[in-house]
Image 1: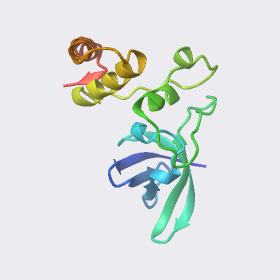
Image 2 (image 1 turned 90 degrees about the vertical axis):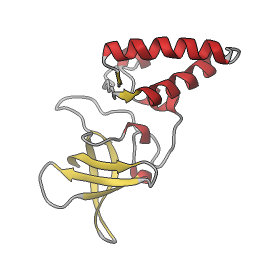
Image 3 (image 1 turned 90 degrees about the horizontal axis):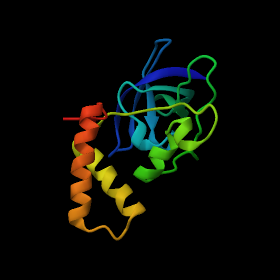
Image 4 (image 1 turned 135 degrees about the vertical axis):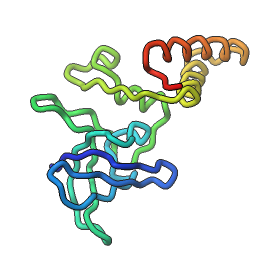
Length: 154
């Protein structure tokens, strides 16, 4: 199992590259080889992965979050499985949020627009009868709170 950091990842095109910690050529990363939610992949993310020989050079497979020494493995998804924002949040939540012993906590800082969209989806999923005006009011309040907490950029 190799360890490295995502150099870049283009979610629209579904691919990117990983720089292995041990050095050497960058490793091609395709969305179908992710065992973590696609939405959690960003530049600088530490990952573990297998290296295969691809058509054009080294290719990553079984890509998951890197664990610290002694940490338990992070729950994985089926390779290539796509998730909704709410499922992605649940898959990367802390042990207290998921109630599972030993699961690593991860936290990405989102832009205000992306955070607002996530909130809208969560609100509609929890309380489908909310009006648009109610959703906007709650979302604006939570975005302000998220900015103060450092969870939201901008």
